[in-house]
Length: 225
Ligand code: SAH
Image 1 (cartoon, rainbow, N blue to C red):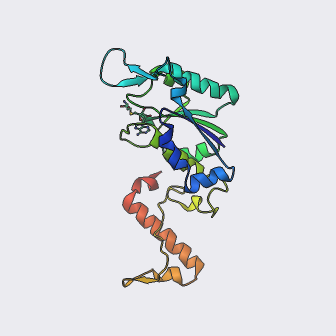
Image 2 (cartoon, rainbow, N blue to C red):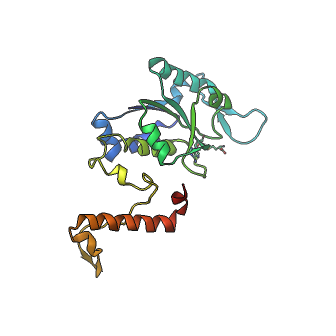
Image 3 (cartoon, helix red, strand yellow):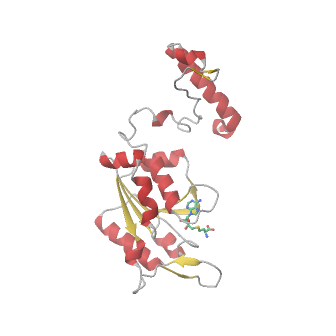
């Protein structure tokens, strides 16, 4: 998979991709992430990328020209399955959307800033709009990092324990059961006995029961679907 991220602040995105699982995925050649600095496509000697909004009102708007120039250059090199704009009024990111996008080959992600991007970018360039939640961030970079993490950890070979991503919360409409590690007793709090008894069918049954109990308590909506 290849992901191209178009941003005015590439340095904000450098760190999430240079550590841990996202870094390992790139080292293993399972994903290529390329950051593109919109400033390089800015207009004039100040490399302008934003301007006042027509009709007045506070806040700058990201101009269409630099965004089209950058993304059209990318599109000339390969075709994209999706060109995604991160925005609070987009489709809410949930596990099925991450699963769907993890099957794609080339993704392009545009990060907004200020008041967002000129509507003509959204109308004529973007193929999908994604929100990471009902709150407003100051830029699309952190949202793009969240989306990429949710996608990349699903790629085969990225997580060391292959089955791990599938047993996470939301994959089967259930939240995860509690997990424990050593020591068996910590400050008099003991690990549930079934987990240390070696009876695997009993362990499986306990996990399912706990997952159901927690889902009923915290996210009954997941069970209604
Ligand atoms: N004026 C816009 C908000 C712009 S916030 C509005 O009210 O809808 C600036 C940028 O941050 C956006 O262009 C978008 O790229 C990003 N952003 C903010 N909140 C986000 C969210 N919940 N999900 C995804 N991207 C978000």
